[in-house]
Amino acid sequence: MRLIEARKIKRGRCLLFLLTAVLLSLSTAGCREEAEPPLEVPSVSASLLNERPLTIGDPIDVALIVYHGKNETVDFPDKTKSFDPFALKNTLVKRKKLKQGVTRTMIIYTLTIFQTGQYTLEPLTARVGSKLINTEPLEIAVLSVLPKDVENPPMKDIIPPYRARIRIWVPLVIGAALGGMAALLPWILKLLKTLFKKEAVVVHTEPVVDNYRDAREKLEQLRHDYREGKTAAKEAYSVISLALRGFIGSVLGLPALQMTTSEFSRELSRKRRRAAALPVPPSRIMQILRRSDLVKFAKEVQPPEKVEKDIDGSLSIVEEVHAAYCIETQLETRPEAYSQEVQADGV
Image (tube, rainbow, N blue to C red; front, side, top):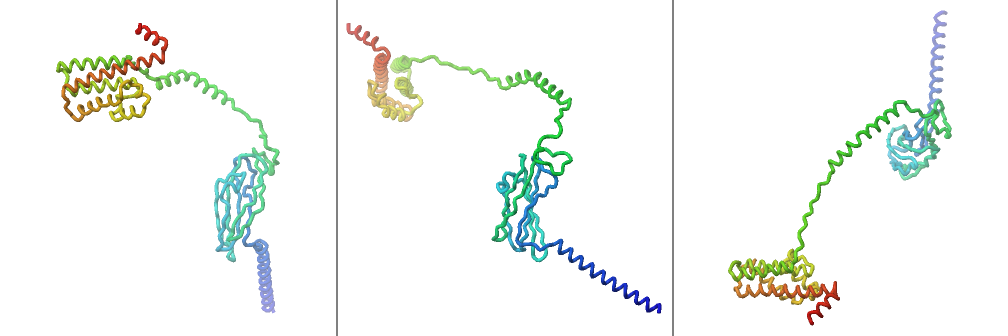
């Protein structure tokens, strides 16, 4: 009898254990179904990850969660203008494979802003395959300071709860720094003057040269020296070229000494008004200058009579141009004085 009763007790315990296991499995399955509701694929949602209140300059983490198929491509916003008025600082992408071929892509945006207020983050648009899905707007509050011991601070609380305090040593340090700068200022200015001191610029002034007198004296001395045999033909033509170029250039306002013979000839031809003011034709001047180049550079030999003739011709050109130039200058500057001189010469 005892054996039969023991078997019955054992069977009852086994049935109780099986019943408990079945009930436990059913309850677990029900909780799992409640914990994991069916997902809509594709779907998009946005949420704020920060738990504490936000202040100016704090990093603001916003999560964009996308549920999509395994092989579907996901495009999400990645430009600052999509998060206006917030500035986008960083983007982090996380992907996780779920059951039944579903993938969860989480994009965590780190934003910031330097103004206080109640802001609305406009809906974010994500592309899943060929489908565009928008999130709901997200409200974000930004304070100037973090109130003490307040879980949900109102937006009006944007002033410091405590009065600003200045430590006693701060004014002392500032005063000492200003005093030191004032004491060192004369030395700094003296050092700067020494470093950036400008050296005195020496200007060399040359005496004013009378080109007419200089050219006439050179040519007269050349004529004397050449007749005495003290100067060769090449040296003679060098003096002739220098005297003619310097004088004619000063009369016409041309840098003749810096020009080649061809450039000087073209300048005389181009500026006919200046050339017309000369009492001698430009061809007469250029013949002597070209002959000078042939003797100086091409080593052409000229007879002594030709050299003397060119010296006299150069003197004649200088005298004629000087006389005509002086008359024109007097007519332009002192017409009355010139007319008086002419009348006196006539008398």
